[in-house]
Length: 200
Image 1 (cartoon, rainbow, N blue to C red):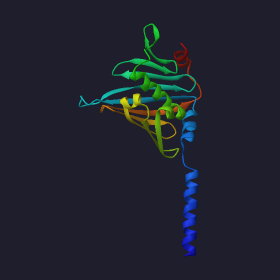
Image 2: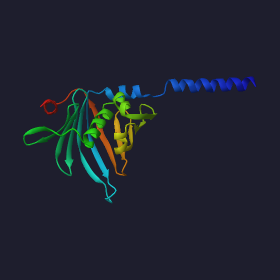
Image 3: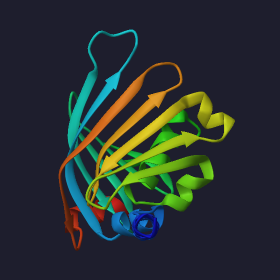
Image 4: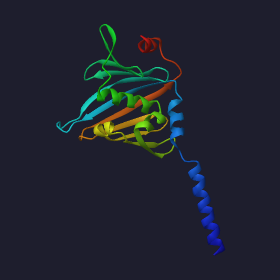
């Protein structure tokens, strides 16, 4: 009986120890917020109920901690977007033009920026967050709290390791978007052209 008690006590201590070392939202935020600049490629699949095949787009992205996100679409059409705290801008022949900010798309992009930058405090205002895994392989599930977001999203699933690798947006109406971030790498600074795109 004494041996059993010691065994149970040891298991309980082991459980407490692993709990204390569990990967939490603050650690995830710190991890994702570390790089000053991240470059990578993306593949986005938009699954619409009315279409048998997903709409696929590809391109490159630049995420800069102090500036925001450059979303450089290459296919099926070439189009550059800049997402920042100011809003969403699209590049045309005359330079960057700010888009209207009162759309579901604007809300989605604001959310997207918060996810990539590891802004868990920002996300917690609008979502219940559930994190599983560790620093090398984690899954974050976002369930919307506000009625406005509940009308758009059923759930958002994010997977990653050192950086975000996959974002899945499940919409209330049955459509979904799968975004895969590939070949991502951290850098210390922006190139001159990238810096110009952010501040122009």
